[in-house]
Length: 214
Image 1 (tube, rainbow, N blue to C red):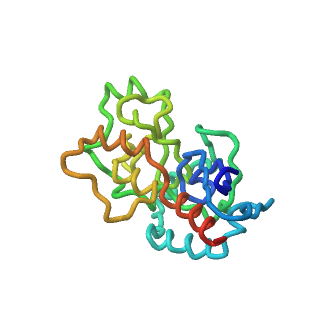
Image 2 (cartoon, helix red, strand yellow):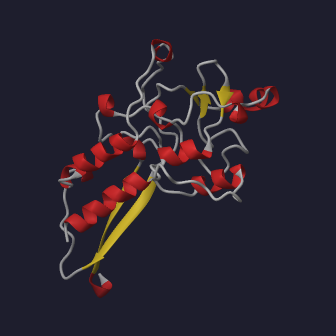
Image 3 (cartoon, helix red, strand yellow):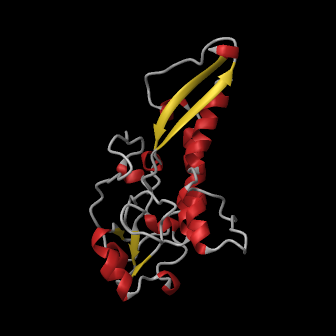
């Protein structure tokens, strides 16, 4: 390569790492060095000696909140549906996957509930999940504006349908827990910014992979 840059390319989604959100993205990492980056046939997880430390740190950041008997009754099909892609190698065992419940601010949030008009207009084309879900559809910048293909809706314990809040989507993107949008940013703008974001944990894994081989 020109100027001794060598690179690797990946198609990765958070759901491959046990994070309950489909967000398949193309990543390219490059490094300037005298010889090519050593290539491997194994998955990226088996190549990072401290991946377990990274994942445990993530689990500490979003600890399992547990589910009450009532919440467990909402258990749904755990089959992973990746609307962004049909080509994701699952890198975390199903029993290790985190739940949507672990990323919620609260189960109920009346400020983000859909009204009757919105329900009639969009419910039939939306993916609706509960706190027990191990996946959610990719959230796009049009979330909250359009329904089809823009991200999952949430069914609360009181059987109300609501949007995920910007903070909850930021949690699913593994942003720092103390991260908050500036006060001048509207909810619509926050959704738009999140729709153009990357998952922090996935990027962290790639950087660990790159620097570990320095």
